[in-house]
Image 1: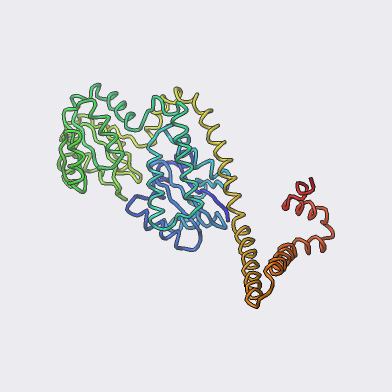
Image 2: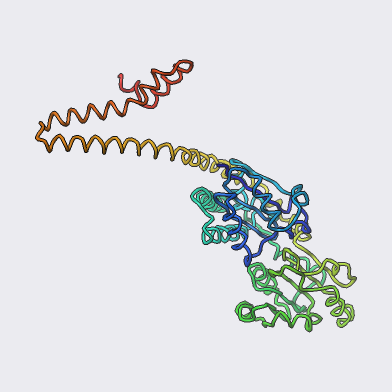
Amino acid sequence: MALFTLGINHRTAPLTVREQVAFHAEELRRALADLSGSGRVVEAAILSTCNRTELYCQADDPQVAAHWLAEYRRLPLGEIEPYLYTHPDREAVRHAFRVASGLDSMVLGEPQILGQMKEAVRIAREVGALGTTLNKLFQQSFSVAKDVRSTTAIGANIVSMAAASVHLAERIFGSIADQRVLFIGAGEMIGLCATHFAAQKPKQIVIANRTVDRGREMAERYGAVAIRLEDVAERLAEFDIVVSCTASQLPIIGLGLVERAVRLRRHRPIFMVDLAVPRDVEVEVGDLDDVFLYTVDDLAQIVESGLESRQSAVVDAEAIVDGRVEDFLQWLQTRESVPVIRALRDNAERMRRHEMEHALKLLAKGEDPVAVLEHLSHRLTNKYLHAPTQALNQSEANRGEMQALVTRIFNLHREQH
């Protein structure tokens, strides 16, 4: 049974491809149940973020995951296959550890991926797709991430997508204090962005969400106002900065809507950040003269400037990862021996019970207890040694190897001293 990771991320595929295979929380359970219930895999977990979609699986054939992904998303396999990567066994373990530690992120050392991975594990457990092997893999991944963050400077001077958004907005407006900001959505990413923008004390913060109560909860934390998502169409022109990240499968801000807002603003610029995958804002909006639209891939160019201060910690972090990979692989090899060990013990237990019943019958007949115990011990010894003795006597071509194996298993050299 192979352990592997099949995925697509910001390094292997552009946003236009990634958004076709992304899974939002609302559909993740359904997709995972379909994958684990298909009979193609024994264990599975799906990690899907704006930068990656990865399937962690245990199955006989890694190709089944690629075929399932294409079928589930109704895409020709050949359309996504050039962008996919597969990490088997050791590389799958190493990859999981690196992802959890922020070493494989678009923003080196960013901590958000760890929470997203924990959420993926929680969903897999609830669906019943998580077994002993993947559970151990992810728990070790979380432990490795903790070691990396506590013993290296990998998270120092972190530049997040949220911080990069503020940085870009300041380039355009100079000061955010005079601007009105609209956040669309009320998830974790919007919360991070709201924290960064609120620190700059903008003139107004408004949060639009499909569920008004949830939007109101977030608004209270930032002294903001909550509105319905449907109200965005009428009020878009009021805002200088728009940051969107929802779970919508289709764009919620179209070209016509933004064109109308630009006319009402008399061509004052609008700064827009689309952090959603699939995208919330139609691609054509970026072509408008008075609109500055940035996606997650665009922000990557900004965060690159913060990498140098963290690069020196990568060597130490990778050393921690490599050491823990060996520990996990050793555990995995031990797990492979479990069925044999269990069968060996079950066989020995059957022999013991059988001989015990035989001895009890002799004692019930009034036989001498000492003689019964002697008889019991001889019969057990003969039965336990029958299989290895027979194997030694029947081996011909590999007699030397068999003798060495039996000698090692039974510690015969030690017994001779």
